[in-house]
Image (tube, rainbow, N blue to C red; front, top):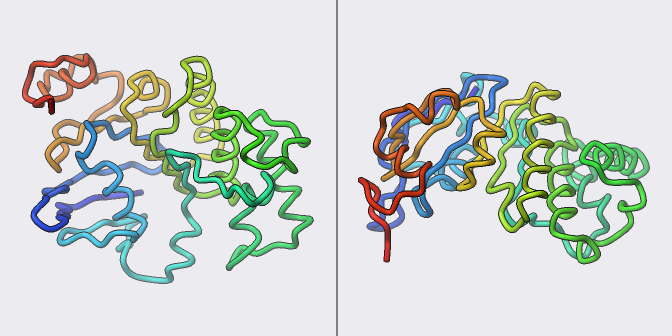
Length: 248
């Protein structure tokens, strides 16, 4: 569904992606891991066209991500942002239905509200949450609202950016289970970027290790622990010594 072909991206003298090559099969859940600043978020932004690669190609369902109808292209995606990125001035249901209230997918407000409430129920929130504002919700509830928004338009592809950041271990586990269930139910293709190894094991079909702007290892999550790759091994076990230099 998504293919990175030798993608390079620099910001001034800083080379972030240095030939990233990766295939994400349709209907599977890929988790990209790696240290901070290794280019994980940049890779997702390149797919969405928020950042233009310096060279290389990104294909989505066989077509070049940089060509074609932009609105139709973006309508295929859903996104759960790291910080939630909810609009403080909008009630929960309008946050969830944001895409359905404008643009090519625009629906009447009453219909959009019904869909939003249905998606809120899917992530374990009751209808009475719909008219609250983000500031009235706990961190875990805000994350669920963000997840409901990500799936509100039934996208083919969903990106999850650090989905459990800032959550306690129990709520992180709940969010991981929800993500896995929803991706499976929808048959969506998912890419998650995370540092949380419990999320990796709960969410992933396949794992890719991004370091120094290239994929060092990729394969099924079940083969991750016996990969034999020194970069992956150091990362998943949190060792201070190894080929990945700890920044002090």
